[in-house]
Image (tube, rainbow over all chains, first blue to last red):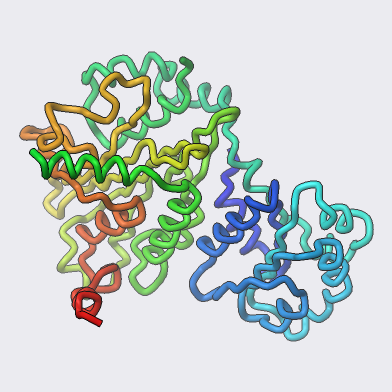
Amino acid sequence: MREPGVALAGALARDEGGLAIVTCPDLDLRDWLVREVESLAPTDADPFRTSSVADALREPNRMALLVPNDEAEVVRDLDACRDQALNPPRTQPIVLFLLRQGDGHRVLATEAPSAWSWASGSDVDPEKLAELDIDAERAAFEQDTGSAPEAWLVPWRAGRLPRTQENYTQAFWAMTLERS
Amino acid sequence: MKAWAELYRQHQALRAMSDREAANDVRKVLRKLSEKPYAVLRRDAQARLVEARVPHSASVQYTLGRERAGEELELDTLPDVLRDVVALRCARLAVLLRFDRRAERLQELNIMLRGLRHDGSPWAVAVHLPHDSDARPQGDRDGLGACGHAALHCHVGPTLDIAPKVRVPFPPLAPAQIVEWAVSQVVPTAEFEPAPWSAVAAMLRPS
């Protein structure tokens, strides 16, 4: 499983001062993802929110959380302004929040080759990444413990397994994966 | 009796929370713990609080560490000034949180720290809030009662199994504060103290 927090942090760190794109399923979740990026950012990144590309470019030493009012316009602005992001070189990334299948992604794919290559490899959809592949996780659990989650939980629930940190962790995962 | 019933009521009320908000608060604590000069977790620990959603359900969980078994504290690399006050030579922090996203409810919490003292003897602390699932007939009411086995409780001892199994009733603190508390027991430094007495005294002064 590719982990959403790690993927997000990787996208933020991959290209120092680059452009990272975070894809959001809807407007409500966008706000949560902005807060998640704020919580992931190192303290010295000093993140700030803006809806304007000009504001983002004015602060090369702060992480700009670019939350567009008009996604298509913002992507076009970024496409036109890439050179400005190189002079002076940014030390912190611009993080652009776009809706999944929204105008921003459409414009990025069709009209904004410069912005597309700028962000290349630094796009992440954390909501999609968070979904567990239950079959793969069950197979990994069985390989790790030698038992299916349901079978492992029988002695645990009967109090026959030691209450160690490792076993609490296994029990937590077994309960996630058990089939009712 | 009334005090224990009231504590149980507080533990029930504690469960009402948004998973995203709670996770972001935990990340902020992890970030502080992983930044220099007192980094006690590897850099960017906040990114390793892993969210996992069970498909087609409201269940979402957060675990610390790529291997999900928690993370070692970096006790070897602490500043010299702290070496004498840290009683453990190694320790591992585990964070396991389970939520019902739709109901905005904390279903289960396990925040555990186990390690070895300098003489090699084991030591563990673990805060648990049992799953309150309908599938458990007793819900989160384990043991004999709300005093001997409070819903939100903390084990402290050489291991979690050695008798007497001490279960300290825990105040209704959110997951982020419990992580802060657990680490503060192992690395007693002002840099990790979220509520220094001077700040508490200032808050208590009538305005």
